[in-house]
Length: 157
Image (cartoon, rainbow, N blue to C red; front, side, top):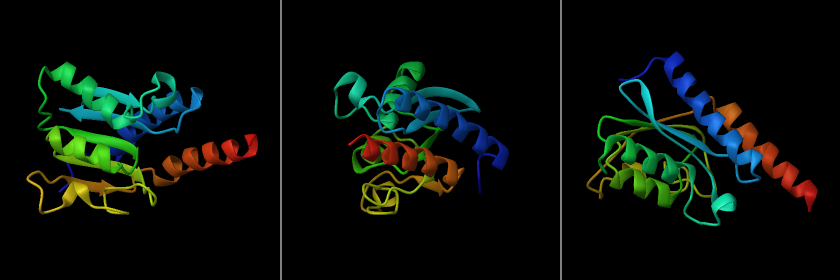
């Protein structure tokens, strides 16, 4: 059973895509994320590895940090994380550690994905925290921004 209507899911994924545009403007891999609780965005993030020269500054990590500050708590219970691209292993681990119960992502990440593509960290029954997962929301738009970024990057070389 979905927590959101299709319209709401698309709205929040568009908000995540706005975050991805911030990464794109800074010539970083365009991935964006928002965390929602009680129909309000409590955390936003975008890839900022190039901007901050920190390998771990993925969109999900930034959004989790912002949501933790907003909530005054490391646990992000009763929240949903929307991200444009399937989370990697590091971000999937952080999602579990933050106790985020729901993840919605746009496009699959066949090379680094840990939400079912390459690994399945988010729903691994051996772990103490499993996440409900929904995929494919605005998948074409989420994939397109990535494809355009890498196409442009190859042309610059």
